[in-house]
Each structure stands twice: as C-alpha cells, then as structure tokens.
Amino acid sequence: MDVRVPRLAEGVESATVANILVSPGDWIEKDQVILELETEKAVGPIPSPTAGQVAKIHVKPGDEVAVGQALITLAEEKTAEKAPPAGKKAPPPGEPKAAPRAAAPATKKSPPQERESEAHAYESASGYPPPASPSVRKIAAELGIDLARVEGSERGGRISLADLRSYIDRLQQGGAVPAAAPAKPAPAIPPAIDFSRWGAVEKKPISLIRRTIGQRMHESWTTIPHVTQFEDVDITRVTSLRKQYGPALAESGKHLTLTPFVLKAVVAALKKFPIFNSSFDDATGEVVYKKYFHIGVAVDTEAGLIVPVLRDVDKKSLADLSRELNELAERTRKRKVSLDELQGGSFTISNQGGIGGGHFTPIINKPEVAVLGIGRSSLKPVVKDGKIEARAILPIALSYDHRVMDGADAVRFIMDLIATLENFPEQELKR
Image 1 (cartoon, helix red, strand yellow):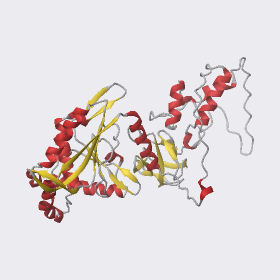
Image 2: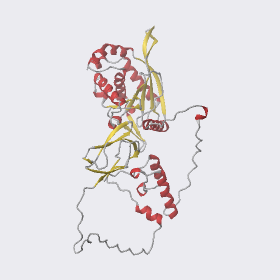
Image 3: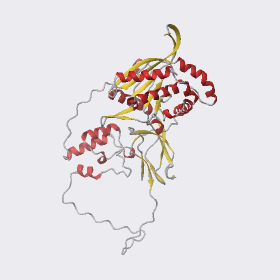
Image 4: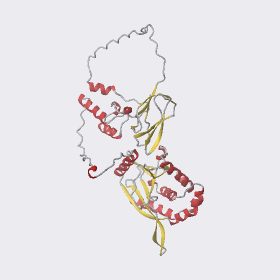
C-alpha cells in the first residue's frame, strides 16, 4: 500500500519534504514517524497509518509534495506460493510454461486516446484527491476535467501541468470532448534582467516559508478590502504596572512584556464587538461568529514571520499568558511548533515594538477579519489636566475587512481597546 500526504491543514495543499526517517527494507510499526514535512511555517511529523516493510521511497528531501501524493510504498505481507489448480500439474523444473493463447482480435477498436483515458482511474482508499498543485487543480476545475482520469508522471504520481495538457490534447484529438474555447492570451512576461551587467550579483532561491508568506499575503491583500485605523495609546499606567509587578513575576520565569496587557485588552474589546472575532465565508456569504478567543501573535524568526496561536486567552491570567507567550515564542523561533498551534486563530496581533518602528499597515491573517499592529512606545509631551507631561505613547494600527464592518465599527473597537489599556485594572495582575 502507498502512504500518501495527508490533509495537512485548511487551505494547505502542498509541503516540502524536510527529513526522511526510514530506508527501503525497514520494518515500521503503525504510527511510527516515517518522515517530516515542512508546511505552514512548521515542520510536522508524518506517521505511518499501518505496519509494514518499506518497499520504495518515492520522494527525497527538498521535494515539494501535494496532498494525496505517494510518499512511500509498504510491501504486502509475504504469502506462500499458490498451489496449481486441482487437476493440473505444475510444469517440471526447467520446462517452459505453455505460452498463453492469444486473445481473439476485438471486432471493434476504440480510439487509442479513449482507451488510454478510460484505462487510468486514480484510486484512493483514504478519499484524498489525486496529487497536483493548486494551479493545476484550478485549471482542471475551470475546464471541467476530472483529475482522477489524468495519470501523473512526477514522483508519487503527482500530476503536472504537462500531464494535464497532454490529457486534454488526447481527448480533443479523439473527439471525446469538445475543444475548449481558446483562452485569453496571457500577458507577456518581460525578459529577465541580467543584473550582472552592472556588477557582481548573488542569487539565492526563495525559501518555502517565504513563498508561503508571500502567497498568503498576496491572497489576503487582493481578496479583502483592507482599511487601517491609526491611533496612539497612553500606556504610562501599563508601564508603571510592569515595573511594579514585573520583578516578582520574573523570579518565577514569567517575563512581563507589553503583549499580555494588549492580549487582555483585545479580548475585552472582542467580547463587546464580536464582529471582529469572526470570519467571512466566501462560499455562503455568511459571517461566522466565533465563541472562543484564540489570539495569534506574530513572531519574528530567522525563517520569516510565523503566527502561533494562544488558546482561550479569556480564561488565563496575565501571569499565565506571560509564561505561555514566552514559551510559545521560543519554540516558534526554534521551529518546534506543531501545525495545530498555527491554526484556529480568531484575531491576530503583530508587535514590532521590539525592533522599532511606529505606525504601519498590517495585513489581515485570512480567514480572520482584523489584525492589530503595535509599534514601539516612546516618551512624548502630552497635555494632561492643562499641564504638559512626558507620557509613554504607543502607536497602534487596526486593519479590518471592509466587507464585514464599517469605519464606525473600527473606531468603537479601537476606542474601547485604548480605554482598557489606559485604565488597565490592577486586579488582573493579582490573579
């Protein structure tokens, strides 16, 4: 049997082979990890669904694989050689077996292209579709082609664009389907620029994570009408509370940063304005309101920006959030987070304060509908009670999906957030 790439996560159709942990001939047990796949900014183990002996490995480290693609083949359990049917004797050793009688010619032949298209039918006991890239799936869907009829030529039976084009050509030549309407000419691709004409250059391939980030950000920016609301928050009180309670928490391994305060303030605002804790279902045109508060926190790593998710923020104390956030961020930087820890967020916070910067325009983490960006706080002169004082001012930016909410909703949300941070309840630190 073939062990194939499982469904990895919602919207994830491909991954890269990071490590192969078995070799041909190895006996593996059920649930034993056979390899690791890098996807969705994490490296995740792939266990074997059954026990067996490794007969063939279809991939190598660095290969990009799609959901449903064969990874390894397990040999069937050895069985004894079948005895000859009753009444017949097996030929003596060395004596050639009788040649099989030639089949009578068919009275009517089908066109070669029809026989070939009918001969291949992708079968998957797991129910996964044939392995193919998202672009190939999209083209096939637009043309009404069942990819189960297309035989893939790449590793693990993956269907390439050339395989799909060849299949379409065969069908059209045989008249099995009407020729598709001519596609609109693709825009001309400008020739590559030879930058080495002006001096020395160095080329580096873009990483899988960088490609994933780019694809997700492009999809979000081009499918969601973004609007960003900019504001400043006086966090002088929060700064004072951090100085007061921070040292005691640090002794127990709970480093009290600004982010836990923002997490608490965000949840309080989400409870009052639940539209910001929702997702827009493009297929049904419905808004899905979430009753949980799982907040994604963007972490800057050497591999790129990764967003692990803190679960049930509303049920945790400020001290517990500090500890969990520190541990999760550390594991994220070491690429030790699981796929599950990168999914299921209902709102995202992107804090650039640690590296500097002020206001910026954060891109929504689709399928969420809003994201909060935080810059670096600084002391600024502020008029308070008729007097000029030096106050700690934090720049924030709220990007939101204009399909789901209006500017007035965003202003109410961000004003509530500001009010909580500027008057943060001290009892939250005593829990």
